[in-house]
Amino acid sequence: MAPDGRADANDELVRDIMAASERRDTDFILDCLTENAVYHSVPLTPIVGKAAIAAWVRGFADVPPGRLEVRHQVASGDVVINERTDFIALNGRPVTLPICGVFEMQEGRIRAWREHFDLTPAKPPMSRHSSNRSARHQAA
Image (tube, rainbow, N blue to C red):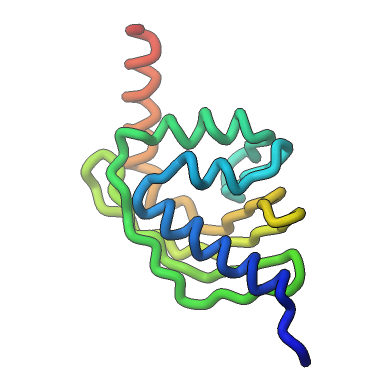
């Protein structure tokens, strides 16, 4: 079977996005999304549209970058799937999240990004992060 150039390019783009996530390069990540992109951490509510995704991502600017270890990644046509482990810190507490990411591409950009994972390890630190962000927002 001949290699699929589109699949190879999509595979490389997702790997670049994982690296950008590690260094908190929000602008690069947002540039890789279609205007009507959907980001869905499956245990949470989907975020629809590039502007809404940008607001959500920028809300984590004060969270230290983590390490994303891709264990397996496959690409076929306009779909890329990876299995990875994200090692992050939320409110100073280490969190390890095994994740399966599914990326649907459209003309070289991501139109749908779904991450399937168990939210349990992140719930205690995330609830504190959300409360802190809400308190800062209310104080402003």
